[in-house]
Image (cartoon, rainbow, N blue to C red; front, side, top):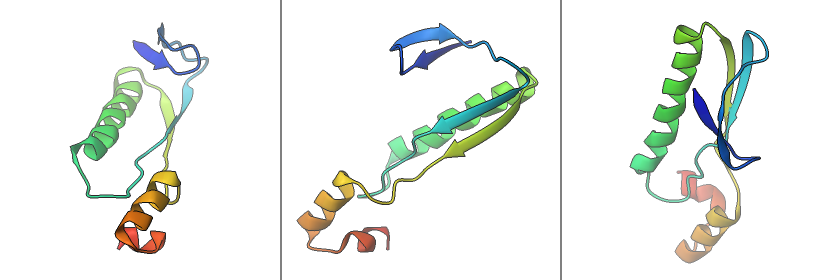
Length: 89
């Protein structure tokens, strides 16, 4: 299995060091209408985790965040004349 390594900016063979794998995914930043790209993130990594667990027999700790505050959210709130917390309502 080849995975993209953002550190080296290359696709590399995935070779687990042991039977436990930790995966962290930077999730969506919800500052506008939900779209298919949001689902793509969840779907892609759901499939990856299932492959690692079911086909490779690995135990996976999977963490994915949802950004609650960043520059895009602040910029969008300013454009709409709202407080940033209101974008999630």
